Image 1 (cartoon, helix red, strand yellow):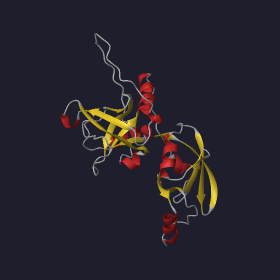
Image 2 (image 1 turned 60 degrees about the vertical axis):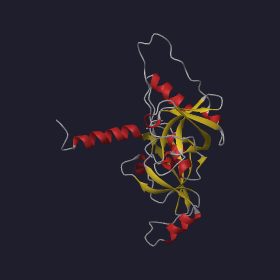
Image 3 (image 1 turned 90 degrees about the horizontal axis):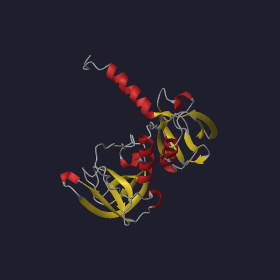
Image 4 (image 1 turned 120 degrees about the vertical axis):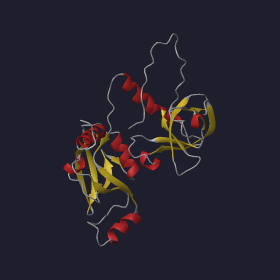
Amino acid sequence: MSDLAILQVEGLESTLPEAKLGDSDGVRVGDWVVAVGNPVGLDNTVTCGIISSLRRSSTEVGVPFKKIDFIQTDAAINPGNSGGPLVDSEGRVVGINTCIRANAEGIGFAIPVNKARDVGGRLARGESITHAYIGVQMSSMTPGLANSFNSDPNSVGRVAAEFGAVVIRVVPGTPADSCGFRKLDVITSVNKVRVKNKEDAGRIVDELEVGKEVEVVVVRDGKERMLRVRAEDLGAKLREAGKKEAAHDPNRRR
């Protein structure tokens, strides 16, 4: 779900050259970058642009199943660029090109190299990569959205908070379901970190330690409530669901 892998190369008679890695936390919007890759089968293609935005959530990018924040760039990225480096003006790799938006032009996304360095190191050590989840679908709360909910005669309750991440669905059988989350709860903080919108909440949840209990403050019917939830591993949940689906597939070979 991070779209990253480690390859082991054997049988080389000499050491491969290494690209110098930069610090993706240090890049800024407007910095010049170069994307290198093989778009649409055209080998060794180089394109130039700038950093257009930082910390784009996977939901914003259109790949909600990924658990990562992306660097956005206007350096031309096309199918075939994936896995190629995004390089700064000093020749240091600051990102790994990974995806584009099918409904947009001049917008590409890269995995920050600091994230790649962390995940790659853990994979190389034989560690498994976990992705925390609690089991809620959210939307960013705004004064307009609060008014819309409150004026709806079919609403299940009233929303008092004007900012935060409003729960629009609690997935049955998840940690959020077990600990008492409800539709229209507005999450305002997680582990004492303030939440302004759904991106804040999603980013904090993604960084949670799997198996560790966290405190979530929600506003429900105008009152603050403290909920305690233990994050679980999304990867394990998806693998379990896949096994159940395969077991009930009538076309599966036996």
